[in-house]
Length: 258
Image (cartoon, rainbow, N blue to C red):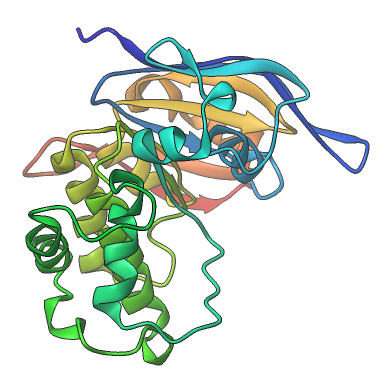
């Protein structure tokens, strides 16, 4: 078992005087894929924003390899943490190649020239997400799914220790959903991801934390967490666990509660 890498210790988050996350603690070992699941409004995205430093915790601390992430400089944090978020507006129509190259900025001195190998890293990342053919396209001309793959490539070339993914499969067809989550694991960093699709969470996460009303209500392996009683209580659905006939992986069949 690898040593603990990410530690969220008693973190609370407030916005406009309202506490949205209540003393949440979770941990991820180096290289683990850890999933946050829960109904809409449960606090998943708010907690992730705190981890990638858009929001400051009202209490508690987020540590990566023992260091308080919120005590780091912006540049040092960007060398260690990359985030693929649900908001990716762009005001200027950069090319896809230019957008991906932005992921290398934390590794340069000031606004200096590219480091040796940057161009190769960017081209390889685009190839991995099957977007190499888009390199010279304007980012604003892309579909939602194409944008998502390009931004994932940008996160990969950042070479982070921690990769934070907020609903990374939004806008993606099923083939690319499976591909992005497999690539996140293959890339090697510790991964913290929020997922709506419980079957994707079951198939790709080592550990799951269930959020409801800003609190952790269950945690463990997918087998331990995704049980009918919890699915009924937290998600309001009847879930029947089954095994994939070839891989043996846990999958869920859903129906309305009677």
